[in-house]
Image (tube, rainbow, N blue to C red; front, side, top):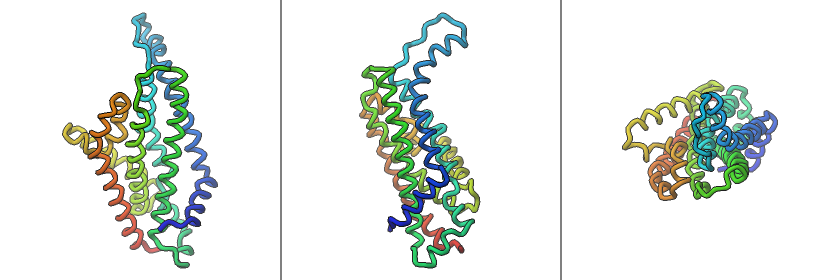
Length: 251
């Protein structure tokens, strides 16, 4: 379903438009700031509050707290902004018409774009994680974060849903910011669902908000199995709907 030629075309386009460069720079900066913010926050609070009350010394947990906070509050939406028009832009300029008339199947376009987008999600998260890991070991050489690698998997899985959502909304809405709008709406819905405590372990948003509990306790990973399965199911369902929607699009 995925053609090497079309994947190369997608990769070259992200390089020419500097999208991949922006991702690398921003997520690299996030990686540096995560442990640095954790390190400096107590001192900054003392200065701003003008108090001599001692604050607890920061630990590696504080660094990973910043990592997941930055990813879920800024990194996720930055990714959505950059790729919000991944399909609508192609449809608007008609660049797919020649390829499709020459026999390229429409589902190949969707799956190839999804493959490249997910690869860039993995690259962004992986780069930020590695940089954060290095500086965290430097600033906080403790043993308070024993399961950092395990806590990363839910974040990767959430990327499947994010990519599928971007493809679906940018195909459905003829606007370059369709993907961003869809992402914001869905995240609001997920947050509203989370108000009901019984739904937390079934809510996909838990994959980007409950990671720190896994860092401290690996048994918490299994609590998120329902949300991981639901997230994968939603991602597959959205991809299916995207293919059907794109099949009906007139170019």
